[in-house]
Image (cartoon, rainbow, N blue to C red; front, top):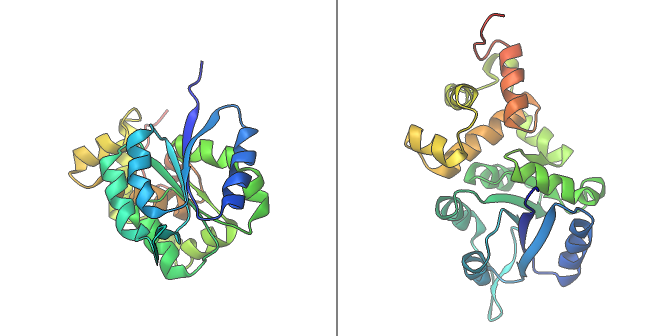
Length: 222
């Protein structure tokens, strides 16, 4: 039997938390195990619960007594180093390009806008995709990330290196790839997710197939 994907939520509006829980309750393979409205509760929440996917707002108060925004950009790489199997799905109202790029570079596996109702209605499917190592972006966010990318420089050398490694050894986890390359876990996540964006796909297998089709990766002759 397939084990449920365990989800934690950091979001400072109770009504939105309730909405996420409602959407995820319709997906039998997803279980919400914890939620919090304050940033300083995040680490204790993750220590207490075994979490596969963290749904994260980028602007939450630090604590009940400190209304300053919690430093999410600083925290994401630390979380991905401490919890190698954790995947982060950001759901936010903010669509500033520099912020989105920074969040993705930090290692988030997805960025969904709160007003993207079609995607929010499919939140269970989005969580499952991210939990399986894929990515999930609102269309406008994907277009933003893809901007200025042309086919000549479709993938960087480092992105091709990571894709060639996971193509050769598909059983490797992200943490194991990071160990082989001697880089941070969040670095590998960023390299893979940015490659997915550039290739217009959502997971490893599709990225490998597309890169081979474009001649960016070698494939054995049949």
